[in-house]
Length: 78
Image 1 (cartoon, rainbow, N blue to C red):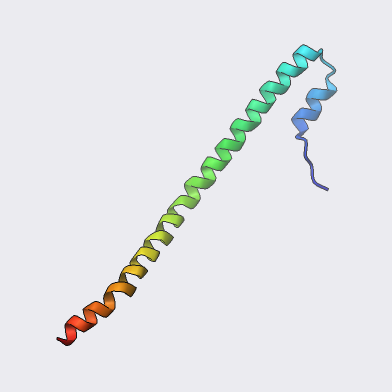
Image 2: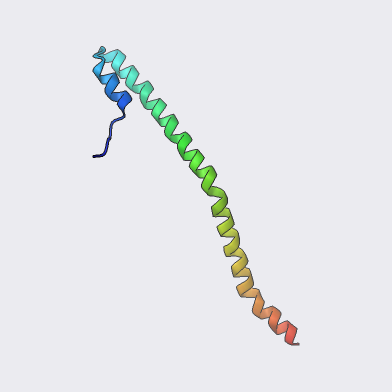
């Protein structure tokens, strides 16, 4: 079974605070979870980005060779 609510939210709701305090606490928790999520995404991008650049580089080199190798072979025959 998947868990949709973090444990920190459940603990926050069980405290039984007033509405004003509860809303402020939920807002702070939401901001904290958002910051954690963005940090995880940034780490993932930092790890994946070099592989993407290498793949794009190989694609560019492959297209270059595919287009220009016939020209070089024709020039060699002259």
